[in-house]
Length: 311
Image (cartoon, rainbow, N blue to C red; front, side):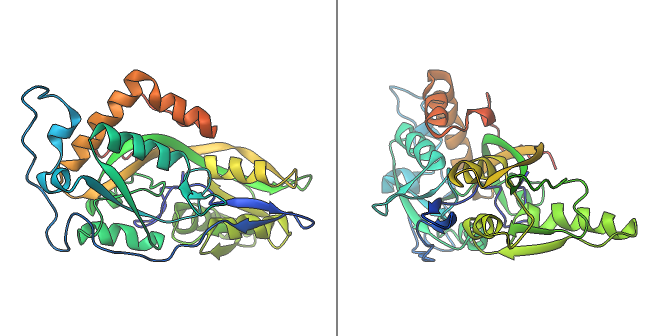
């Protein structure tokens, strides 16, 4: 799935809405690269754990870094749009499955979320620089990324291709076809290059990978017929198909499932706090309720782990 490269997210198609008369999927909000520092000033990632509540020593908040707990907020780096996970609604409010889930997790920790928009590939470096406490952009937890940050897993997704309705494409034999991807994703850095190399080794034409900075642009260009197919995370592709008004359909099954995770600074106790809070939401049913609201319950997990990369 979209484990993408070290900085890529395994995310889903950003805010895509059908444009009347053309069926073009248009953007519902732009990233503004707002990278204000949050509760952790650059160069001083919080590692000292807050004192536990004597009345409830096992509460998830007892694992929080003291600096974050005392600030009362969780500073979150996010790149939008990537519907249904994170995008802007018609009023400009950031919404989505990831948003509702992290808001609920923060609530279990006694914190408020403070979302900061950023380019996707700048989120992990900003976490390393302690400008953000955590990233929330459908990141695939990969072994390569774990060299730079720690992850708390919260979901499982795979890769799903889409095609124009009635124009079949085989994801395993797309030699010579134009395939849209979001730049720096696993589909961009790993999946399509590997499939294209296989084509060439078999004496067939290479896949023409067409990169877009925004996932919704990839979907829009598929609707318009500028590319033959699109490869993205399974929830994102499913949402793009739903929003296309019948112009798009799945191309083959979901494959290469892998965990999504929230990246935090290497060695930060915040990973454990997030893990404990999410487990509470899983146990009390709120996690499932949030997933069902956004139609992504197929990717639910039972046990969040720290650094659960499969590849």
